Image 1 (spheres, rainbow, N blue to C red):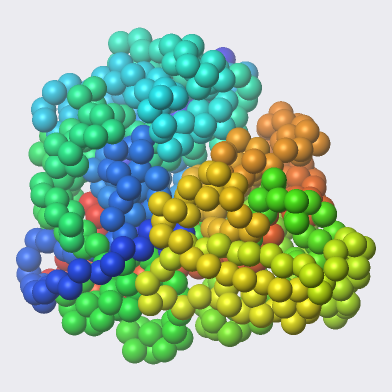
Image 2: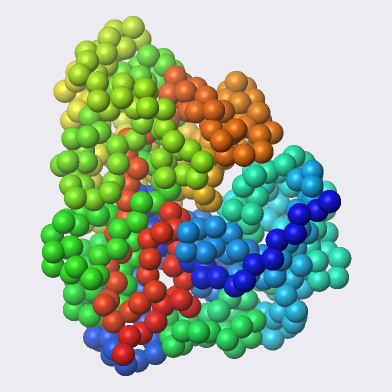
Length: 532
C-alpha cells in the first residue's frame, strides 16, 4: 500500500542568512529614497550580486534568496521548515520507500502564461544532471538517491528514473531516503522553463513563483507580482526591490535611515546594542551552518592527523564567541553537523573534551609533539574570501594557533572567483570555510564531504556508516550512525569546525510576517505584510 499525504496550503519561507563565504563586490554609492509606509513595495538587502538566478546555476545564498520569490517547486516549507505542498497538491510514497508520486495542481502556468506540466519537472531534473553545463548542485541528484543518478551525471541524463504520467510526476529511488521531501525544497529541484539557459538574461527568465523579475541593474533586482501564479496573493505587497549592498555597516545605516525595509542576513556583531536601540526590529536566526578550517586533502604539511588534532585543540572557541559574538546565539562548534539539525545532537563527551577541557592546551602541544613536526620550522597558510569592512575572527584564530603551538601562521584573502578556483584546484593549506546545509537533515552536512567536489574526503568507513544510516526508518534509529560518522570526522578532521554562526536581520516595524522558527531561515516576500 502507498501512503498518501494531503496538506492544506501553508506559509512557505525565504532564506535570508549570513554566510561567511558571501561574495563581496565594491559598493557603488547609491541614493536611496526613504520608504513610504503606505506604498505597496518593499526593499530587501542582498550582500552580493547573485552568481545566477537560474536554479541550476545560482551558487549561493544571495541567488537563493531571490529565487525563492520567483520560483516554486513540488514542495516548499512551512514556518518550522517542514515540507508542504506547493506545485504538487499531494504526494504518495510507496510502502517500500522506493518511489514518490506527486500530483500537480490543475492549470499551473509559467509567468508567460504557458502551461506548466509534470514534463517540465522531468526535463528540469534531467537538465540538472548534464555534466557539460557545470551545474552548481547536480551532485544533489545522488544525495537524493534518484535511481540512475550515477549514469545521468556521467553523461546519460535520460538514465535518471523520473517520469511524467498525466499530471503526475513519479520519482524512483535506489534506496529509501528519509530526507527526500526536505531535499525537494532545495533551489536546484525547482522547475526550469525549456527556453531558459545558463546565459539567459535574468529579466527574460520565465518563472513560476509568486513574483517575477521586472527590471535588473548593477545595483538592484526588481520584482513584481506574477499574475499567472496559481493562487492570489494574500499580501498587499506588489513589488519587491532587492538592493545589492555588500557592506553590513551600510545596510544598517540605510535601515536606520528607513531606506531599507529589511536587511540581508548579517553577522550578529553588536546585536546586544542593536536590540536595545531597535527592540522590534532585530530578528536572530540560528542557521544550519558551520564555520571553520577546511583541510586540503592533498597537502603534505597537513597529512598528519596528529598535527590536525593539534590545530583543532589549540583553538579556544569560547573566547572567539565572547570577543566577537557576545549576546548572540552563535555557538562554539564541536561537530561538523550543526546542533540545530533535525534528528541530531552532538556527542557530549567529545564536546566537553574540545570546549570545556582544562587540559586542552597541554593536549594540543602533545598532539604537535606526536606529529613529529618541528614547530620552529612549521608554517601553514590560511586563505579566506575577501569581505568589505566586516569584522573577522580569523586573526584571532591565527593568534591562538601561533601562541599555543609556536608555529608560523600566515593568512591572505581572495576575491570570490579566485577563492573558488583555489578551492577547486586544491591550492591551499587551509581555507576559512563556511558550509550551509541545503536542507534540514544531518546528511546535508555529512554526504557532501564525500560527494561534493568542495571537500574531497575519502573514507570507506565513513561512507559505509552513512549507508547504514540510510537503511534506518526513524530519526532515533539514525542518530547513532550520525554520531559514529561524527566520531570518524573528529578523528580524521578533514574539516576543523570552529563556530556555528547565527545570523541577524533588521526588519522595519511597519512590516509583519517575519519569523525565526525555520532553521533554514527562509521567509518569502509573499508572506510579508505592510501594517497600516
